[in-house]
Length: 56
Image 1: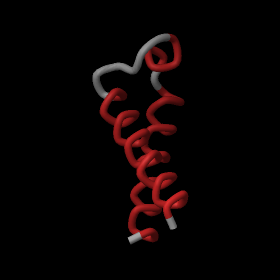
Image 2: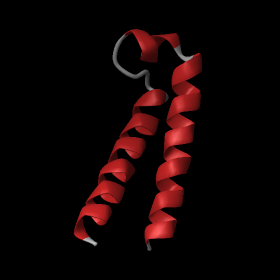
Image 3: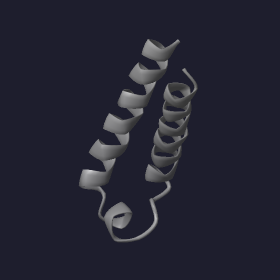
Image 4: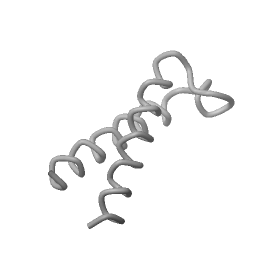
């Protein structure tokens, strides 16, 4: 489970970072309509992964 969660977390991080680097609206203010779900997925998976580490 942890490996799979970590893989998903890293993929979400990469997707968000790649989008963020090329999206001026995301850099200036709140995420754009494309960036918002990428950021939300990254945040959700990051929290899940960190909770997993704390609990095991």
